[in-house]
Structure formats: structure tokens, C-alpha cells
Image (cartoon, rainbow, N blue to C red):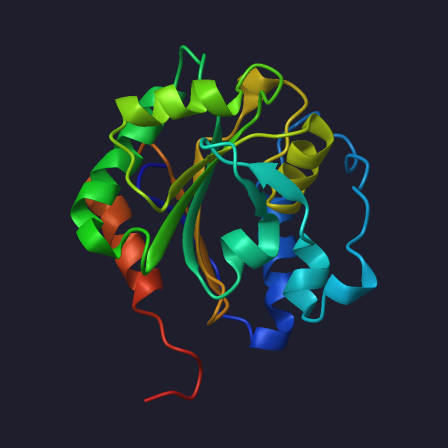
Length: 215
């Protein structure tokens, strides 16, 4: 199906993790195995407090500048995000999918890096180093607020699994965008190769979402 694949019901904030688990399962692909080994838990001083923090954890990834980024605290907490998985040497759908994100970035203008963040996670961390991802990001004219993420394979696999994007074979990566507003608990998914104008409308609807009960 082109365009919107599914719309996720807004969950109360306390149940945001349930929403993520539900769509994580719905994006699973044939042949997916169990969870990768969970990384070390944060120290007591930085122990997760919210349900979402406990679910995602602060597993550490590396962005295209070689900077360490925690999955929940740095990338998701309180943010509107567009998430996809890819690998830089992909000869199939990855580049067209990321070109779509480039168009979304262009349409959103200054909102990117301020109100919306784009998170592209490599499913091939052994090959996709921060340096190679930085070159890839330049091809897409990525601006601040668009993160291309890699890191230790254990950590990357763990993060992908939490997001419902983990695959055993990189060629089986999903062509799905996860678009979410962590603050309000509204999450949607869309076909990453859909027309960019449709994707922009979905992102704007999530960006403009308000918490339940607000005016």
C-alpha cells in the first residue's frame, strides 16, 4: 500500500510504552529472532524513571560526527521524531527512501533540529562507520537535527529491536518510517517510498498533535 500504512491510536502518556510495543510487533518481518543481548543497565544515578525510559533505555549509539547519543534521553525524550533504518551501501530502496526524507527536511525547514528530528539507524554498523555516514549525510544535504546512527553492533541491534526495526539480514531492512510525538504519545507509521507530500502531511499531523485535554 502506498501512502499511510497504519495510524496508531493515541495512548495515555503512562501507556506510551505499550503503544511502542504494539507497533514494534506489527513491523516485525519473517525470520526475526529474539531480542539481541541487552546492554549494560545505566548506573543508579541515571536509572530510568518513566515507562518509556525503562523500555527504550539509554543504550548508546554514535552519530555521523562520532558523538555518543543515548537512545531515550538524547534522541526520543520530549521530541517529535521520524525514524527509519537503512545501510549506506544499499543498492535498493535505501537511497530513494532517504531522498524522501531529504524532501521532508526541505519542506519542514527550520523545524528540523528544533521541533522535529530525523533518526536514521544503520542496520550494518560493522561497515557504516561515523565517517562513512558523514559522507552519506552530505549527499543528502542533511542539516543539524538529522542523525545517522551506528555504533557497537550489540547496541545498534538492541535499539533497532526496541523500535521494531531489527532484522537478521540487512537486505531485509524495513521501508517504514516511524513518526512519533513522544510528548503526547501519538505514533504513526508510513511507507517510506510513498510520495513525499503524503509523508509531509503525516509528519505535520504528528508535529501538531496536542496532549489529551489540552486546549
